[in-house]
Structures are given as C-alpha cells and as structure tokens.
Length: 179
Ligand SMILES: [Zn+2]
Ligand SMILES: [Zn+2]
Image (cartoon, rainbow, N blue to C red; front, side):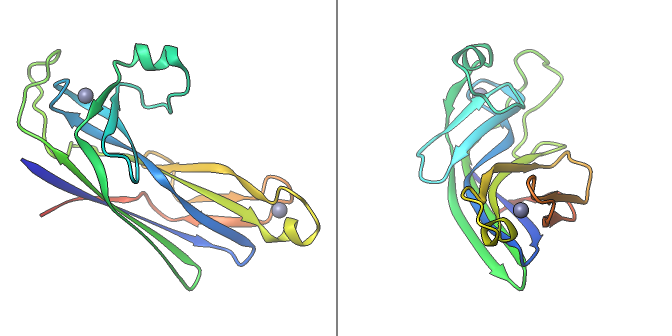
C-alpha cells in the first residue's frame, strides 16, 4: 500500500541570520524491500527513489555504502514546502512510500510498521551571518548544517566566526503518519 508521513520542522531565526532549508532529508524507516526495521533512508526532493542503508551517519565514502547494504527504496519526497513568518522558518516534507507488513529478517520478533516506535529525522539547512557580511567577510553564507531528532533541545546555533546567535530550535521535528 501507499503510505504517507509528514515531517514538520520549525526554527526561530535572529535578524542577523540569512536562512535557507535544504531539500534533502534522512529518515528512519522500516524497509520492506530489505525486510529490516530501523533503517535509514536518504531522500532528496526531485529524486524518484530513496536510498536505504543501515547507518545513522551521513554516508560519504564508497566503503560506507558497501558496508551499509545500500539499495534503492520505493520512498520519495512528494511535498516540500517552506514558509517564513515573523522570524520563524517552517519546513514541511511529505514522504510517500510503498509498504507492506513484514517480520525483520534478523530479529524475527520485530515487525515492521508504517511509522516505527521511535521515528527520527535529520533535516539540513544553510545559514549565513549578516553581521559578517556587513563587516566585509566574503564567505558569510555558511556551510550546510543539520538538525536531528535525538539532539538535546533547545538547540542554538551561532556564527562560528563572530558568535552572533543565528538559529534556535525549541524541539525536535514533528513526524506524523497522514492519510
Ligand atoms: Zn532497505
Ligand atoms: Zn558572523
């Protein structure tokens, strides 16, 4: 069957922040293709399939990919919305996937479900610092950063160069099964 999950993340940004959500996400998933619970799928908006692997880390090297039993998975981003309102930046993903019940191949007592017991997600963003821009720093748009469900909340992110507070997130992203 075709199932859908909605992920919503909200951050508060300071006036000094130039904030942009990324269009990629990693998500915990019980994968009926490899019949394992608690896998990780890496998704990018526009891609027609996800990539399932066993690691909670971001995979970067071919060795990691081989070790992690990576395979294409029938899950993709079918909705991607961002909104800005009074210093609050909201991100909403709809993830759609094919799914059917299964027992875990290596832990037969565990059953896969549409939404696991402790679902988690990692979302990505980029934030630049206007304080640095105004003082003439060339690369004031920072590198990509991420927020994930298992962080200690609230999370505050400041400019690595000048220490200006840029982003605050009060709690983990919401993850809900939707009809
Ligand atoms: Zn899989
Ligand atoms: Zn700065």
